[in-house]
Length: 136
Image (cartoon, rainbow, N blue to C red):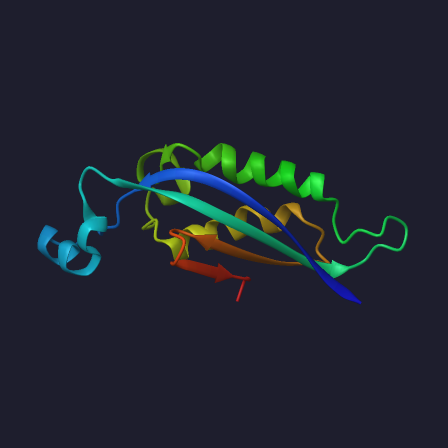
């Protein structure tokens, strides 16, 4: 029987949505105020979902303290109070949209988990705007 366990986390980060190969006018038309050259910030809410079989010995799909520590080390420490465009290597060449941030989070966490579990990332950029990614 498969069960999903989930852990919430939070980080604050600044970013700018733009493409260097586009004019300011085109960036402004596509990304609007998210193209602010001085950047802007969000209070991101992250939910990490791990789905797998319940271990008959422990009763866990995954030890939640292990998941908490993994999210802190791989995501919160790397992204919190950072300018994603400038300070986070994964976004040097990748536009830090919510979609791309969710994919990067997935790529950072998935190799650290047991191969037998499934991972889904839900990232809230605002309380009403959020994305989900599960490796597909």
